[in-house]
Image (tube, rainbow, N blue to C red; front, side, top):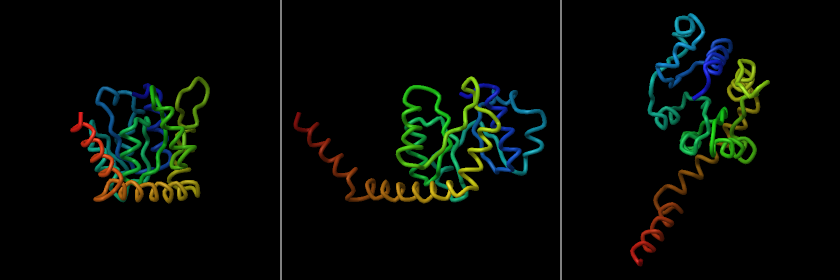
Length: 174
């Protein structure tokens, strides 16, 4: 969970860039929104307590996923063909974020400034890079290629099916 200051910084960046958004945020964190944010951004976005993440990420209008980089979130972003803005928080998140950014080139970090906190300027730069910059176009191309490879592997006769059959055989033989 981002800190109260980070929630406010993300809200301010979304508002200042005019970025359309769907934000899944727990109700108890709403008190950290800048005053009047919901009224000013009502036409550009919506905050909900929960959303079906994989369905949202599969929608063609979705341009970027601001994520903590948990394994499932990264997988669902790739499956949806959506570049990521990485905000790793703990455990494997940092390693996953590094793979997203440096290994696959399908995301950016949030320019963390002084003390490790996410700032409005860092989030603004990340949103601009992914949604409006040349870097973002390249990320969308790369994540689209990964998505196609994933669909092939998970489809009928793909490597996922073959690996599952081997696993079933190993378990059955024991």
